[in-house]
Length: 191
Image 1 (tube, one colour):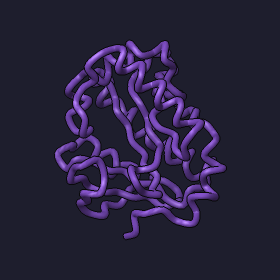
Image 2 (spheres, helix red, strand yellow):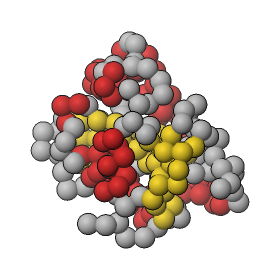
Image 3 (cartoon, one colour):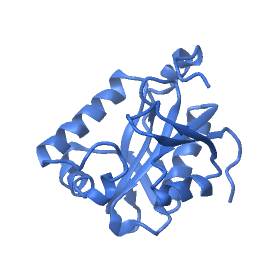
Image 4 (cartoon, rainbow, N blue to C red):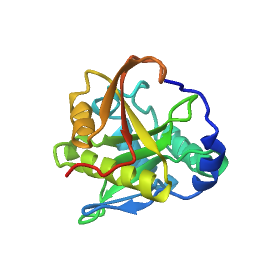
């Protein structure tokens, strides 16, 4: 599989100027605000959240605020979305992050989810993943999306399965790790 840039990338960049806010039955997914750095830090300083993410836990509130600023700048400057906050509609509490962005040094669009441990087991990863995939296919008209998962991350492996994604095997092309690569082409999602 070719992981480099493709001719479609220039066409897609114009579509990628749209932001990623979307809603599902129970969730709102929208860009993080720097004013929410404390909640973001609370999530990403937990080693249970970052265990399979490649980098370690966030070290300071200031570092987390800077990451949010950087992500928001990339919305305007680069053809990718980055990370967005997942907000529980009922409580308005931020439960984690959803991502839709280019995988490093490729033209493949990655979907992903990072949830605070107290919200694991509620179906929010699957629901936000479905919403991101729906956004990618219907709003962005992307032909396919990808996910990369540490093979030991059984929760995320199950989410990929529930989303109907197909495993393509182990890759070392992204994030300096051996990761399971999944894909889903633009077609109806199961269930």
